[in-house]
Structures are given as structure tokens and as C-alpha cells.
Length: 484
Image (cartoon, rainbow, N blue to C red; front, side, top):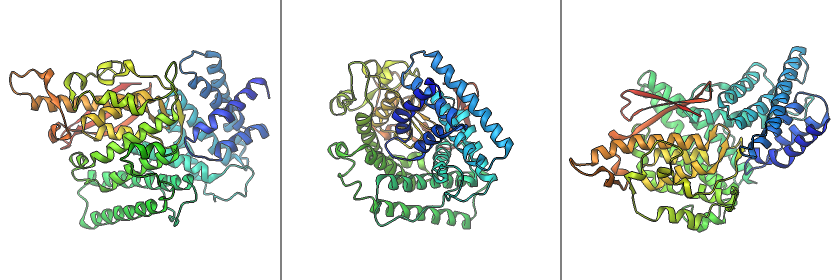
């Protein structure tokens, strides 16, 4: 083992492994480290490649080309060794190939190559579907197949949450485990919540496909209704079993949220999002989202506190000053003037206010975090203050959580807001009225015929993302391509 490998493995243990799991603990990344140090196998160059790329990522733009070149050299070496391992049909090829798919997806996420990330996860799912194996420990490697499957499950849910059904596969179909009377840890509670989230993504994707193809029969509609009711009961049981973990008070209180450790904040945010998705009227959801303004506010507040606790700044700013900085930003007016509610450029300071905001250190994990929930609040909540606060956090937090890139989500949300508010203000402005003085105060100022539904966000070759959206009547679909 040369000095560069030793350096990378040390960085993986000290920085990469803890960050990949976000606010929760998992032995998987340390199992990768153990395999990388035990002997010559494809895992060592894969781990070295991920660690080197992660070091490049956290240095945030310092063009360290030798480090980047070394990472790609190790990446290509790992791919060659996995291919040779499979060709030799060695007994432990299954576990190592599956582990390599997970590590390769991490590396592509760090590079911001999300289509390649999805390709590696799909390869892992194909490996699992073509070789039926038990989840026991009787095998030649120490890797936990259960933990490997959990990573596949999480990314599977992330892709479907974006409206892409490329992972609508039985390989990651989730059979919900029985909720205990009380969870023994935040890790156990989070795994149960991740299972439910993934099952819901499958449920809504399947339901959407059924409604697209034809109007479902009364029997089919009844089954869908009962299935959703079963999910509601499961979530209620989860909340009862996690009360001792989330005992800090109501999420509507900033003082209660401030007492929560990061893992409790993530549990709270995810649970609120699931509650909204289970209670929404799917026949009229874009309008029905207005009922959940308080819940969206709680999501944004909890995410804000989480970022304040976990995201150190650079330069003179060491953290987000949640109590003063953000309150000051949003307390100037009770509404958002038009001059601050438009502007498509992600680099403009009129809409985002980034000119005066601290830069945050980049963060990368493969776990559920705050980004998808902030995006949901920004794109679905029509309260101007709440959605703009969510967009601002997305544009500042500099986080990648699997496929969810905060900067991309912020740009997409800004675009949705611009489309909707431009249409809403056109309705609101009387003839001859100065449009720059016209304001949107509440969700009711964005009428139904001004609202759009983002149907799908799909990563494409050439580092692009295809955004498909339509009005709430489903009349016509518009496609836009964003350069990443």
C-alpha cells in the first residue's frame, strides 16, 4: 500500500464514512474500510477513489487536478478488477460487485454526475434480481447485504420522488417491518421511516401509472384507498413508538426545535412530509396543499435549525444565525414585492438575497436529509414567505444528499415560482396598474389556473436535467432543459 492509498483510507475513516451516513450511524462504510485494508480486492481502489474525490469535493473548488486524476485512476482500476472478478465467477463476486456499485454511485454523486449514479444503482438492483441470496452472514466477505440493500432502497425512493419511474422494480419493493412498541434508537426509527417513504414512492408511482393508462375500476380505486389507510396506520404507530425520541415539544416552536439533536430534526422533518403526503387529496393536490401551510413552515424551520447545527460556514461566518439573520431577512415586509419574486438567474441577488449570505461548506451523504423536503416546501407551498425561505436555504446550504443537489433544487424551485407568480400577477394587476408595486401576500393570491405541477425531473447525458411540468388541469406538457 503506497502513501497515497494510506492517505485516502485515513481520510475515508475520518471524514468520508461519517459524512456518508449523515446524522445516523451505519457499519456499512466501516465494513468497506475493513475490506479495503484486509487484502487486494476491487473494494480498495473503489474506497480510495471515493475518499480522494470526497477530499476534492470538500475543498470546494480548489482545482486540485492531481488529486482528481488520482481518484479517476483508482476508479477505473476498481472497474477493471470488478469485471475480472465477475468473469472468474468467484464465490464472493456477488458481494464485492454489489459493494462496488454502491461505492461507484457515491463517487458519481460527488462528481455531480447523477445519471451515472443512477446507472450504478440500477446495476446493483440487477445484480440482486438475478441472484437470489439470503440476507444471512454465511459468506466469504464481512459485508452486510441488508445494509447494501438499504442504500439501494434509499436511492430508489429518491429517483421516484423526482417523478422518474425507471426504478419501478420489484427488486427494491419494500415490505414494511413491524413497528415495535418503542424504538431502541434514532437509527432504528429512521430505518422504519425510510421503509415507509420508499413504500409510499412505489405506491404513488404505481397509482399515477394506473390513472394515466385508464380510469381505475371501483375495485382498483378501493384497493388504493385501503392501502393508503394502511400506510396511515403504520405512520401513526411509528409516531407512538418514537415519542421518547422526539420528546422536545411541538415542531412549531423554534425553542423546541433548537433543543433537538440533528437526528431528531431529520426524523421530525421526514415524518411531517410523510404526514402531508398521506393526507393530501390526490384528486386536487395542488390546491389542497394550501391546507398544509403550517406543516410546510415547520419543515422549513426544522431544516433551518438543522443547518445551523450541522453546516459550518467559511470565512468570517461560522454558522447560520437562525434566530437573527433569517428573521431579519423575512421581517422587513409581510409580503414579497414583485421585484423580489422574479428573476430566473440563480446568480442574481434580487430573488435569492445571496449577496449578503454566508457560504456554507459542501456536504455529501447518501441518506435522507433536508434537501428533498425543502424542495417540496418551495415547489408545493404557495405562501410567498415560506417558499422563498425554503429556496434561500436550498441555494445556500451546499448539500448533496444522494441525487438531491440543493443548488439544482433551488434553481428548479425558483423557475416554478417565477412561472406561477408571473401568471398570478397577470391576473392581479388591473389595467394601467404599475406591476412592480403589485404584491402576493398569501397562497390564495396564486389561483389554481396559475399553478403548475412538476411531473418529472430526469437527469440526462451531458450534465443536464430535463424538467417536465404542466398546469393543474394536465392540459399540455412543457419541457425545459437546465444545464447543471
